[in-house]
Image (cartoon, rainbow, N blue to C red; front, side, top):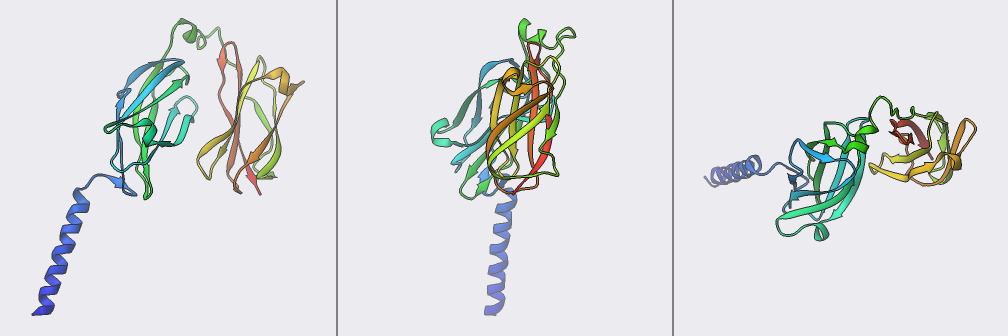
Amino acid sequence: MKLKLSALILIGATSVWLAACSTGPKVRGDAQIPVNISPAQNSSLAFGTETEFVWEAAPNATHYDFHIYDKTDGSIFAMTKRLDARRICDENRCQYRVKVDVPIHPGHSWRVRAVNYLGVSSWNRSYFDMVGDGVAVQRTTADAITPASPVLISPTDEVIVSAQGNVTFRWQASAEASVYDFNVFNVVEGSYVNRNTDMPANSICSGDTCALTTVLDLPVSEKHVWRVRAGSAAGKGKWKRQRFQTM
């Protein structure tokens, strides 16, 4: 009789636990998914303006990860990890201000996720369209063609470079390019490092080849990525990517 009673108690407790799990908030790692507030879904943002992104504070969140997805080339813009909730949130809402200058195009998105000592939540994503004034729109017209993507030379996916120290990245100069943007994607941490923006072509290029020597501080991996894009008065071209290995 005592054995049957203990079994019933155990079954009842298990049922209550399962019911609580099935009806609770959609979480992963005990961090609840934030609710995006502003800019609202399918909003239009002005090119190059500083925008305030707002979401509901997630219970028990200590930090937040935030980024903007550039639909035109599939890249991540304005990636920020581990925003301190104490600095950007009050009791109910969190606010983060960033200048948005992704290309003028519909279908970009911003997303945020909550973080605490137990893990991270899933991302919550909101879509927006990037619009611009007369000057910005002019950059995308037929008579204002952006430079072609550079042809990357080295390092390639067959080359192993030092994860810690100086590494030289080389690519073929793009016609009409006056500046270049460069960065490295750390696949282990999921972040862009070694960011260099609007580097004058005449400072890093000689003839048909451009070269940039930078100091890496990366973990060992076979899947890091470096990328370059060319720019001119007409705007920025598309990114060109190349995988490389570190040891």
